[in-house]
Length: 362
Image (cartoon, rainbow, N blue to C red):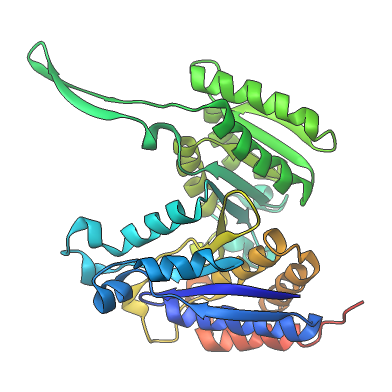
């Protein structure tokens, strides 16, 4: 199989972690007989420095002409004082809009080797943490009407949350499809005891469930879900949730795993093309020091194989290689315990590839 991948190194540690992820993809291609063709794209601060624009149209077109997009990280204090419409983050927002991605999918997974890094009690962590939050990305209160006005001598502000049936249905479908590729359990999270938006959300999700009889659908109020994520995270497989609630709970979920350096994410829309990236930032103070953790980006590449290219076996082999390296005690600085020896970014990538080389294709 041949796939064209738009690669955005971006800013800060972005080029370092992307380099390791691409090398892992090349190793997978060699093992399974695939061909990955890469198209490098300038986006973020590096694009502003070169073109005066964080995402020139030519660069967006390269992404739109690809089968999927792999992103390192963008931004940094260097660009804090430039006009707001030229900042690196604007390039990312325009990329999401241009690609039409409306679903952000963020796994929360604790690697057994890193259980001690979680802030949760060992008896909770020992049950396992391995779920994914499917968050609606371009609707709800963040994209509704916002206004501040004067009334009766004081200011009043309002922000409108709004969802249509079709917006809920399309994110719900991604939730069900994701659950089908995992343990076939989907938890729909809302606030239907208070909000009309949530009552519509719940009704649409239950109607959609008729198309997925193999997936178990449950409902949970968002405040209860926030509690359950820290009380009993092992109960979750896939959570589907609206934009603002998802923004909050996905950050909560990332913290219980111990390190953001280990967490990938994807943004998906209609079709199979997606945007894949680690959840961490560009870490400019670590640039060029060979200290970054490439695992989040390598796992993002694995997500791309699984969800955009339907290469679950190939994604599994990457995850097994990472687990084997962690079993051997290798740690980058962000996941090392006090006094533990640390492994550099390039060395971690090489170790993962060495385990990939042992893969037997059946």
